[in-house]
Image 1 (cartoon, rainbow, N blue to C red):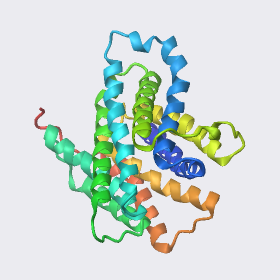
Image 2: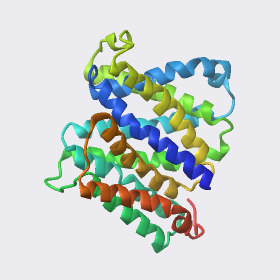
Image 3: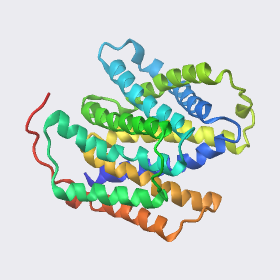
Image 4: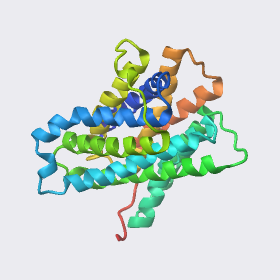
Length: 296
């Protein structure tokens, strides 16, 4: 399991830098079109491979699995983006990470699995760390907070679903490329409906930060990191995967310092340390989970 934890942590590092890349794209795109073009690019780059593999004509149900997964992933990104329009970045950052709590709660409800005190201690430590990193101040909950909460729910079920189907997937690359293709179609359609057409001059300026950001998000964050997620979740229980994903925030903060010179205060640094410590302790404390008692 250690190797897969390392792989999943590597994915969180890619997604952490994705925050930097996303800010670059905002120089030329609004958030909705940034997400849409990111997955449109990933989908188009995936298409030759999918045609070669005859993925759209296969008799097995990989298409169905990838489409279901894409809906969960799309919901995660869409509700996060919509939520950010009326809530603070700090609250959005914290509420989104509640997926780490929703995953074990959902597994308890669906399978009867019970987690021991040591695991809940890791979750509590990580969430306190996130609150410190986000400079969280809980004030006047609004519609944006509710939308962000839906984002956390979709994120939890995306991780749970990947964990459920990962071992039945022959090719993680094919599955994720299909997932990107479907998210690209859905997100571009939604962007057209809510935002209207977008100029594509960003694609002609190869030296701009916006172009580099779009390439990073499309290739590394979407095509590579999500493929690694599928591979790693073949061996990592979903409750542990959800906890490891929280490493995305410390990595984002680290890259923010190096690229934008964004400084962390002592509480932010303490929060990042708590998150990293909770992940480091996963091999020791995260394994302690009882056998499922029932299934539905």
